[in-house]
Amino acid sequence: STPLYSSAASDVYKRQGMSTPVTVIDIGIGNLSSVLKALKKAGATPTLTSDPEQILQASKLILPGVGAFGAGSEALQKLQLIQPIRTAVLEKHIPILGFCMGMQLFATTGYENGSHPGLDLIQSEVRMLDPHMCPVLPHMGWNNLESTAGNLLFSGLGPNPHFYFVHSFHMTQIATPATVNMCRYGDQLVVAAIAHQNIYGTQFHPEKSQSNGISALKNFIDHA
Image (cartoon, rainbow, N blue to C red):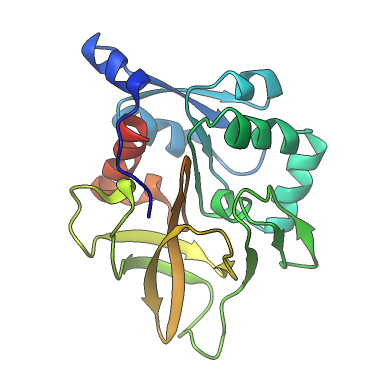
C-alpha cells in the first residue's frame, strides 16, 4: 500500500497562504478548461505546458486526457514527452496524477485500435472492458468505489464515494505492486484508481465529479 504522507513543499505554501503550483501536461487532446477550473477550486495554481523543461522542474504533475489511448500515445511521442515525464516521475520522484486516458497512459501498452506504447510508469496493459459483463459500453455515469483503502486521494471521503466515469477501456494485468481501488460495472470489476509511491491515477474524471472530485484533487495537491 501507499504511505500517507504530507508534501513538505505543499506545507510551506499553505503556511504562507499561497496556493500550490501544479503543472498540467498539455498533449493537445481535449478541452482542459474544466481541469484548470477544478484545480483552482482545490487550491492549486495550475500551469498548462507541453515544454519538457517545465515538466522536469514541476513540483507536481497532472496528466489529464480524453479519447483513445492510441491518440494519446502518438501525441506524447510527437511532443517528445515520454522521456521527460519518465525522468520527472521515476528519477526526480515528482508526484503525478493522471485521470481517464491520462491514467491509462501510465501503462506499458494499450490495445485500443492496435498496440501502442505507454509511459510504462505502471507495468500494466490497457484493454477493453468485457462487453459480455457490462450492461452497455462505454461505462458512463456515476459509480461507487468498492473500497478506498490505502490511497491518499480518498482521505476523508468514506469507504464508497462516487465519481463520474466515461470510458470503454481500463487498466489491467497490473504487475507493479500498487494499491488498486476498484468499482463494479455490471459484472465487471473495473480499475477505478491506482497509487504507487509518487504515482496516482484515476479512471474517473475528478473534474466532473463535483465535491468528491475536488476533494480527491485537494488530497493530491496537499499530501502527495
